[in-house]
Length: 154
Ligand code: INI
Image 1 (cartoon, protein in one colour):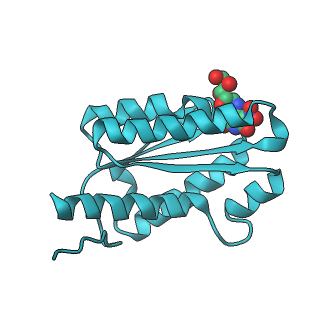
Image 2 (cartoon, helix red, strand yellow):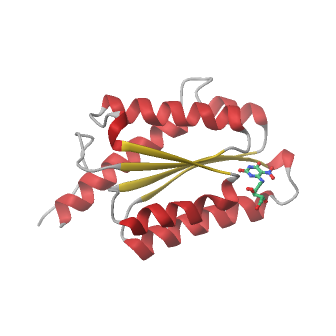
Image 3 (spheres, helix red, strand yellow):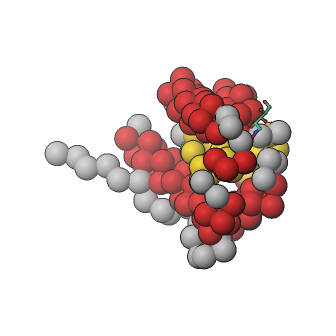
């Protein structure tokens, strides 16, 4: 029996980050956490490309372009959708999640869901580093784990 488990060791390849600029301050914190965690795991800035999308709804299309290019080991999606701020929360959050999953399955490239979906700004701030945890950092770790896991299975 073989057991495959992705390590958090330095992965090969380039990484793309797609970040929404809606709720920009929170997204900047997610991006900083993501870049720091990539760097601390041996992925320097010159192996990372970043694209800014208008909002979370547009993130999957940009992620798809990166994933289709064949130039990236993983694509990390970062954004922030706050329920209290929009009556179409469910549409934006749901379509972002669904588009990210479709992109990953269609391309075979790990596309990581690092989009905060919260009820309040306070919850979003807490998950963007204010209280310690940073979902951008978690997303970077998930990307590293997936790249190493898929590499070990292949
Ligand atoms: N986009 C977000 O990323 N977060 C939000 O909270 C948000 N709100 O509140 O509406 C949001 N809307 C914009 C959306 O992602 C698209 O950019 C827009 O609908 C244009 O297609």
